[in-house]
Each structure stands twice: as structure tokens, then as C-alpha cells.
Image (cartoon, rainbow, N blue to C red):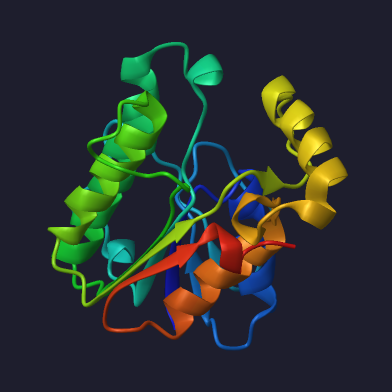
Amino acid sequence: MKLLLVGSTGLVGHYVMDLALADPRVDEIIAPVRKPLPAHPKLHAPLVDYDHLPDDADWWRADAVICTLGTTLRVAGSKDAFRRVDHDYPLAVARLARKHGTSAYALNSAMGADATSGIFYNRVKGELEAHLRQEGFESLTLVRPGLIGGKREEFRAGERFAAFILNALDPVLPRKWRINPAERIARSLLDAAVSPLPGVTIISADKLAG
């Protein structure tokens, strides 16, 4: 099984990488990155510029794609930059992979993803989901976590505060509002890629709660 993983250095992507490297069902992992990754016998990590992805690379042909690319408005610096990372890059990957015969795509999206939303973040996520549905994948899995639990390399004050509140209220919160552990999200993405279901599958936050 050949897996194409984009966003492997982020919080969820890092967990996907660790799980996939240890999973006997996965024979090879292709992880396009901007900076070199530690070597591993199962890993091929080509250096790429996401603004100029190679359209003829043979590593686009995989059994499945897992996409965990994402940023925040604060980190991106503008709405245009945010859209480029959270919409344009994942869609470009999808189109190239599909062009080369990849049949399954699993996306780490977001709770509230809605192309008609008045909230910019949710609208961009929803637009990506809608565009991915048009690419003709035999299997498309949309994982929609709420607040993601785990230690990030970058500091996100809003997430830290929200996590503190949700942890305190966890015993009384509905499952869909509870923190979603990054490892659980990663495992859902990996299972969707290794054992893809036909059509479109949505995995909601309540199924990812700790």
C-alpha cells in the first residue's frame, strides 16, 4: 500500500506519519515537504514548493492521499494566504494525485465546514470539501474535528484557552463539543486511507471525542 501524506509536519500529520510508519498495512509513504525529514526505510520525502508542484512526478501515483495541511489566519497573515494553504494546496494535491490514478483521499477538515457559511474559516473548509467532491475520487473521507487536542510546536493562545475551558466542562459537554485528540483524528484518517469506503464518508467530531 502506497500512501501520499501532505502536511506531515503538523500536529495531526505528525501522528499520521508515526502511525503509518509503524503500520504493517502501509508499505511506502510519500511525504512532500519543504524541509528534509529524518530518513526511514518506508519513507520518501521529496522537497517541494507547494506553489509550484511538479505535475509529472511518479510519486503522485498512490493508493490514497491523506491531507492534513492547515494554518491559522494569525500565522498566515492574511485571508488570501490562509486560503492558499487551507484550500488551494490541498486541492492542487488532489487534482495531481487523481490525474495519476490515485483513487482515495482523506481530508482533515473541520467541524462547521460549510461553503455557504458567513464565517470565513468554515467557508474555506466547506469550499474545499465541495471542490474535492468534484474530483471523482472513488473514496473521499472528510474528517471534521472540533478543537484538536495535542501539543503544537507553534503557540496558539486561543486554542490553549478553549482547551482549558473544554477540559473543565468535559463531564457535562455533549460529545461533539469535547476535545478531539490528535492521535484519534490521525488514526481515523489512516484507517480511511488503508481501508477506503466507496463514495463520500463524513466523520464528525462526536466520533473523535476523547
